[in-house]
Length: 361
Ligand SMILES: Nc1nc2c(ncn2[C@@H]2O[C@H](COP(=O)(O)OP(=O)(O)O)[C@@H](O)[C@H]2O)c(=O)[nH]1
Ligand SMILES: [Mg+2]
Image 1 (cartoon, protein in one colour):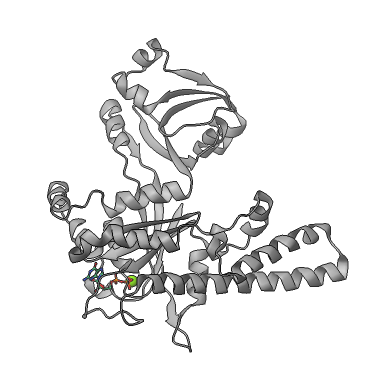
Image 2 (cartoon, rainbow, N blue to C red):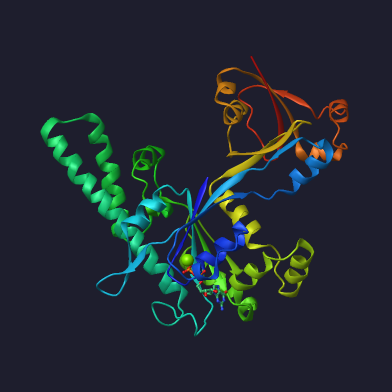
């Protein structure tokens, strides 16, 4: 899973990136237009418990890839425009985190003048919509010409989806919020449209604004309450300082600024939710490992995520829920004794936190 951090210049993208990735870039890199990339371990307290129990030789956390995407420029009209570099970078992202600035700092002027989060969110969305419309327009032209020339049943099926989507964008509605059929989604998938990507709006507040967070979040949700969109807030500067501290000092810091959850935890939780992801575990003395799969996946599909061969060679999955396992002292004999250890077939729908052992041929 790849998450792209996007937003206007000086909104705090690189600050958030450093906070989450636990990297500290050279100060001269902050505020500069550079792309950064990191693989983030997904924090999971359940893994800590499993490690205590199994003392495995190897631990493998789930990971996500985080990209601090750059590449916005001022257009001739003074508005923000996406560069081709930006567009090709975000194409591969599964979800976007849009950093929107609320902090006001004379030392860091906002590129568009006064602080106005609704304006920033709207101008970004407009650019996304324009970019997608251009892609669809191109494709519609091509498809129409092709149909005229040689017919083509598949193209005739594609065209209504393209036109419908174009029309939605024309009404200034992003595709992530639109009602689209699963056939539409399959057709649109190959175009990597920006307005189809799940979006997490991350409001960057100064520590002096910490009590205003909920009010601002409500405002955002009023204008962007659509599907596949979520909003959260964080204290950019404070959280970055916090990420440099030891765990104990960071906790004191969180208390002082009444931060209930770190930006890292919040972002990953919301991203999992937006993307409909869940975790399952494989455990043992050799390795404890957390895996990420889509909600609703079957045991066979989960096995396929572990190893492609396991999909076709799947026989059964041995399953126990994480909570049941811990409740019974983290002991397999005890969960078995209490009937919590189940044998499931390939149709079994994996649940969040399942501990799986795949039997395969
Ligand atoms: N006062 C204040 N400054 C911030 C905050 N977040 C980021 N900055 C500063 O704003 C400038 C731009 O931040 P940066 O993360 O580089 O923004 P980017 O251009 O979106 O990557 C830097 O000088 C940061 O130190 C914040 O919450 N409060
Ligand atoms: Mg930056």
